[in-house]
Length: 310
Image (tube, rainbow, N blue to C red):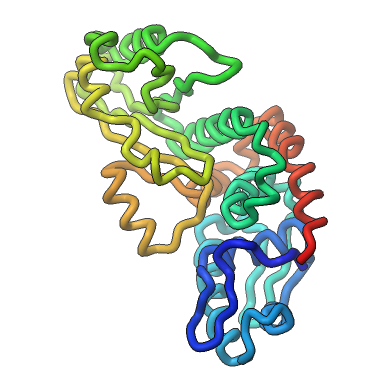
């Protein structure tokens, strides 16, 4: 089994000191990257041996909650789910290379729970962001197939100015540009906007549904929840109708937090399982090139994850 995360799982004697989302990510990672199957008893025993719990009944209570949450997650991507879950066992259906988007998002999640492991790959942060934006673009293009989806974010391979980005967006939407210089900072590259999604009508007129999306793949995602700032974008582009905000991240939030973050975003919130639900629309929804890049990015990280020791 994978070593337990260094964050989110602590010794529990009189109360649970385990975050349910961390435990679920750890179980998913075990199955996707290491074990072919895990029984309920395997996980309980591992937590007892690791001295997280002294009491098997208390450990079983937490594992039962994890089983319920994992079953719920898998139901959202059925019939393309990588695991089969019964009351006492979880078995792997697909290797991670068959579902590289799942593996990629899970590795991004694990970076929050295995911080020393994640630090070994910090130099690739820009590539990570580019891959995540491309993943969101392909997933949403599949799920919203009559919408137009465009990547707008600045990157090391796409370095046009904010003025150029704004003019391109305004032209696509048939809107007029505003005072870009006044309402953006000197260092702004994309003003918090990574992806544009809109649904035009045949008449080509304005007043259509428009989403401005931030794609946050790092552990500092909560700091970006306010972006893109719709009020600022309403000055940069003279929208006839106010657009809505959207936010994408690779993490799987528990239901209560998901609802709370929806309120913060006040728009479309796309998490790991909403990304992966593209498989409900089309089995092979990712481009071959993106699959190749995700596998290439994930391979060294998985190898080092499997070598971690207590």
